[in-house]
Length: 320
Image (cartoon, rainbow, N blue to C red; front, side, top):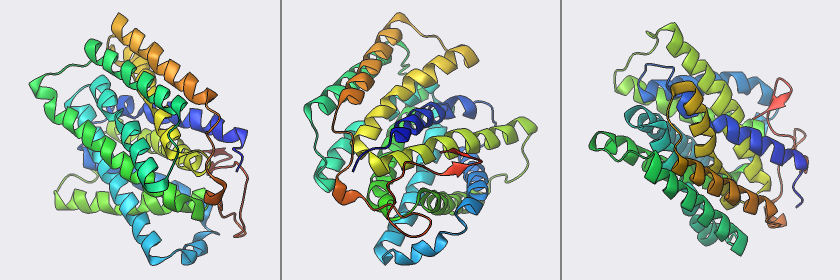
């Protein structure tokens, strides 16, 4: 199956949007579970009407696939918990670097579970990206005891992202983007609010800046970021999409430099160059597309669609 050119555009836009979650989190003063719950509720409410005519397609799924959709939502919720906790308990640079192990996890799982080919260029891209991450680690990574919990949260976040992403790889072709993201975000929202109430955390007593954080987290990294990545994995192998997320530390670090004054050292700049090189190698890889056997995205009429149009949000598109 050919990859529509628009998919690459949405992938780039999605990466830029998803990378800013760490910076946007800094705006709010709320528990990670509260931020997660509200970003997901806002995103679900805004996206739900766009899929109003397609929910009947869920009846075509097997019981196993429906369970997997809920598991994907639960993994996404806990992924968000651990990501926000990592940023709050460590630095944006630490969280982004430790999260960057996810391409290795997804590439290995994609090979053993889905039989995705791991070619030479993909290995080079992973190698360059990880080398860049390690070099960044020697510069901005702050391995301090007080950051340990946050750093471990970022690693757990990477594992949960892999689970969520690999389920998307399996179920996503069976549903239109609109329906898939609404169901997954909705499931994640239910898990998040259940956790919020169980922990007896504040539900609505937040200041205006924290509510702005909730709104921006819903609009930018969720509706634009994650939705775009979910759309891309329909057309591009999960391992290649995950390697492209290695660019997130660069995007997050540059914005953190301007927004929060977090320094960018010479070593960090070298790491950024290597990560950029990994993305270039990935772009030059001719094996981006998924296998034809994995095609079958359902259109609004219920037929198979080869179009490259993802979730429409007021005429535009976008899922970390």
